[in-house]
Length: 229
Image 1 (tube, rainbow, N blue to C red):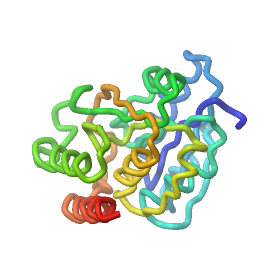
Image 2 (image 1 turned 45 degrees about the vertical axis):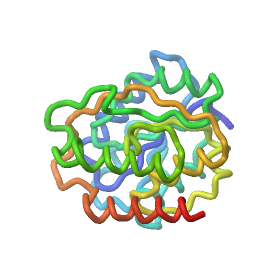
Image 3 (image 1 turned 60 degrees about the vertical axis):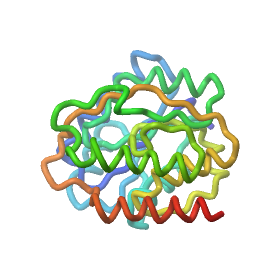
Image 4 (image 1 turned 120 degrees about the vertical axis):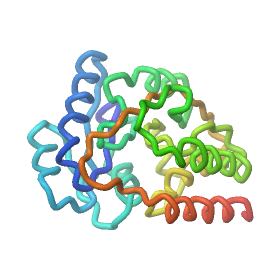
């Protein structure tokens, strides 16, 4: 590995917010003096996302297989850091304050999950039905099916050891990847912990990539398969 840390951002048409996220990550790297890279896993953007990312010094890898999970799996394979901290590049996550994740990874935790309910959710940052029904229910269901003691299964900001993640055999192409990586780390017996993570209103001006009922069903379908195994 050439770096201690890769900050990995999956990207699909994020020209309105990607510069903000990369600049936050660059400021974090500068102030923390950590050896790190910023890696954008582009999933076929047709706007100026790639151009902006490269102009700001981020490394871009192009992932042809479509889907949130596919982009992240591709990014994990291309990462040059001992650790990865992944986060959406829509501006909803704070890339300026990653010390908690890095500290927990250095302590030997293989997966460090953010928890938005502990960190605080800015008004308007999460739809009512996600905040009070969808995410709490799916997180409860995830704990029940996998045994993973994680309070927020769907926080998009999380850190993990790169080589440990590569050994998991991750395969989900869609949003259910968020559940898959937790379940497989838990099944491997890896140390997992959570830290408070604030959620901000995103800076994206278009429609969100998530589709509540479709993606929720895919998470449940995956978790039931985990339980049967």
